[in-house]
Image (cartoon, rainbow, N blue to C red; front, side):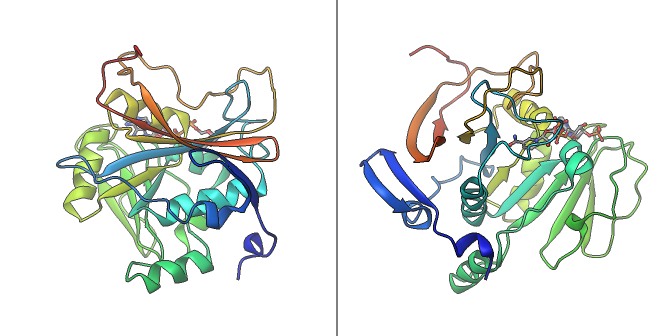
Length: 259
Ligand SMILES: NC(=O)c1ccc[n+]([C@@H]2O[C@H](COP(=O)([O-])OP(=O)(O)OC[C@H]3O[C@@H](n4cnc5c(N)ncnc54)[C@H](OP(=O)(O)O)[C@@H]3O)[C@@H](O)[C@H]2O)c1
């Protein structure tokens, strides 16, 4: 059993139905996803930032969130059919997209695959294949752009080549939907998030506001991108752990930022 669940993770639920001093797993027990939109998977992003909105400290996300945030990250993953990340994140820090033994057992008991399908989306540049992401039994898909020189991926990883130089988010989600994936959680990074936002492909955002004020020019949650479709969110829930906030927003159709 993972050490992450041996110590309890206490949270207050601030919204809705305020309640104090809950165990995080208990507070998340009712977490369910809405039905996917017609013809594509439900899309969510999960990110942690500082109070001033930076998604990196010294070039990585390490240190922005607490141990409780990392447990929450796994609880979110466990609700999804697939979990993905951009090649920039893989190159910077390596990634680990599994849910952990206890949540894998819970998913299995529900008749689901132990882990979500794992996805990395790259463009034209090869990704290093010696990292931990390429190990393990869960299904993995590496999406690459048309001109990416990679011709094969390590055993157990499917290499999926997109027709465009940079995989078009709409093409990616259509491919996944055709394989029966009806929910995809993206865990960044900010550049990939921006492309999905620009294509109107963000239905929910899980945002951890860590308690740091950084004052740096590090990447924000979503890099600025011309053509991003503005979205207005609805606050679905707020949990608090010590000085950290866990926010869940849901988004309607693109095009409106007014109240
Ligand atoms: N705070 C957090 O929660 C959090 C979460 C994740 C990551 N991070 C941090 O964010 C940094 C990495 O983020 P990043 O923005 O540099 O990289 P990224 O978003 O992880 O990946 C960007 C790369 O994805 C590839 N890509 C493929 N299709 C794309 C598309 N349609 N649109 C955009 N990119 C596409 C491109 O690879 P090619 O280069 O091959 O073209 C591009 O360079 C790291 O420091 C990481 O630690 C923070």
